[in-house]
Length: 281
Image (cartoon, rainbow, N blue to C red; front, side, top):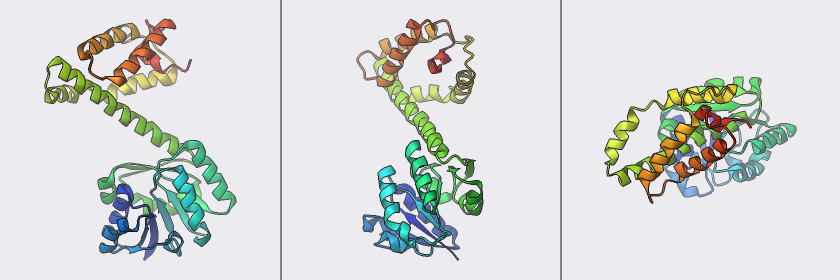
């Protein structure tokens, strides 16, 4: 039976541990600085450890599901002396790219095997092996855990050997999600100010093709070709109407976008496509 350790019993870490236990065939060790969080996993068959070094003894993989870079570095420092030479550290924590690259280089120099594997999924998807897991690190190392990781996710994407690439990609994804949430909040406040019920606003948004528009504008930003389909000047006019409709209601995302548009127009980009907002210059 395979033996793994899952370190960090937040919502995502607990979801991963539950999924591993439910699928069977894996002996799961769990650890959390607040030990009470391991109790529900023990009830499902996991073995809890109070000392993180004890949790990693004899395991094939160590799955880190922690909060940030500082905690990842501190936790690895605590347990790395207890690892067997063939253990692979699989770090699912959302981290900063430059620190991820430095961590991978430092661990490689110590003869420790590390892969960064952030995910685009919530706790439910972690339990049921859905969503997406990105992995960055050496091809040979990834090949050794590919099958095991594939059982933990809906889509497994090895983005390459560059150690910080999955970290950057994860931040790209989260930036998009958080920005959409922020704009959605602005739209709801605009709807309130216009006397439109929020359910109606959501019906309209359900008919808007976000992926198509994002794909077209993203391709323009990549190529640098901003031949107009929807000029920045016209887009800025529309945004003025949005802000006037919202009135005094807080719409921080739209107001920040207006400032950026104004700067681009002042730079002479008003007749180009709105995608010029992402110009490299």
